Length: 330
Image (cartoon, rainbow, N blue to C red; front, side, top):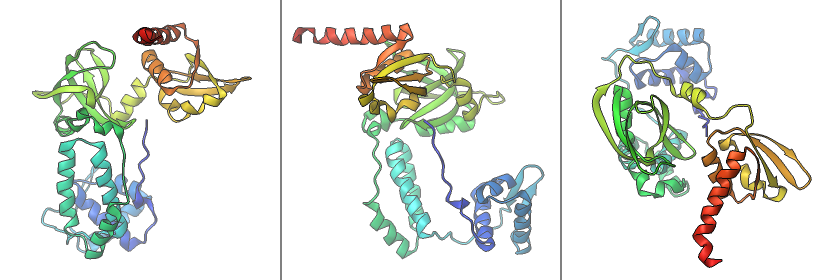
């Protein structure tokens, strides 16, 4: 469910290379905080101050806003950026991921930006990418459906920046029909290979997690919620996670079929397991019992639910419906 971001810039580099990299970082956004530079290069704040002073002494016009960060004067322009073969390869990986993990609009925009970047690459770097192009692939079965091609990522990004209210028609997993809602978006997140919108739902008067491929219609309204303090993505995940450290689900799984759960058990609140004679007792914490039941049946693990009784009834209901669908073949 969670992702680890790996920053190649954390590798140790000599000071000359670091000063050049800091200069490029300063050009990458309007204001850069000292702490951002320190975190990127794993150096102290005091070292950041010394590096900034060294750049200023070399004639780079760096401005500073007290308590906020550093910026380059608008009149200053860097020469064309050159890429290493490793950086060029990273661009290719980004292209492959965007192709399978976003919708048509984002793919088109990224492709356009990438052409501009490739245009400034040296000939040997272009050859490097050409040779690597067919040797790297990303597969995401979710992206094959039509709903995944229109995730409206661009509209949602604009609404996030401008704090605009969105009007959506949403088809939840268990509702019989799609409902119209007005939401205040707080963040986009990709987990379990799907994009999710975290937002304050006016209808529910609470925060909700909306899967983008289940949004049938989306409209950006003229209303905004500027000045309202919402949770950050990290705060939302901590505040609304259905997982706690107290188990409410216990199942018995045949030892030889436990492997069918291992790849996905942590997504469903796995806490612990205990070996029995012929089975493994596994404990979970998850309040979404219907979703847990569907997952359990789909795994083919042949698990027996010990508790809660409500989960037993949900699974029995699904099994009865399945038998009913096939009764004419029995």
